Length: 133
Image 1 (cartoon, helix red, strand yellow):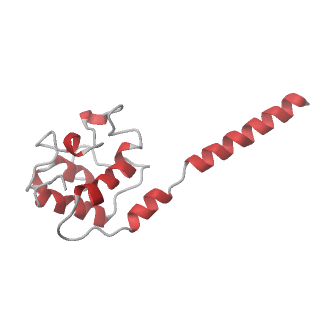
Image 2 (cartoon, rainbow, N blue to C red):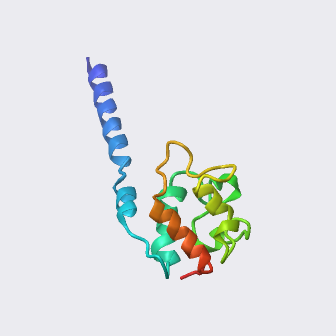
Image 3 (cartoon, helix red, strand yellow):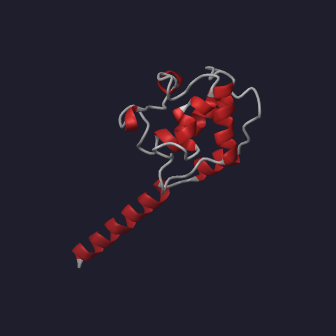
């Protein structure tokens, strides 16, 4: 009887921890932010998107480095000219991927997709020179 009680308490505790750890309010808050149509800031607009939707999902961080790409900071993000071509969003593999035009559309199925405003913001940031601002 004690074993059944212990297992039940353990299962309940585990379920509560799992439920609370899957808090998507950060992603929802981020999705409600509007990125301006000019003067897009990497630190204020772009890095928060990467943090919420790319880095902490176990993909494009320094540890997992999925596809050889880390989006944890400006220098990692812009290290490869083929990924982010400053001034040329249409030549940037990052844009191809987030628009679903690349060989590896991002984010993958089952992950929170980027909003149109977020995609447009990333494109504007690249078009404006992909500055570290």
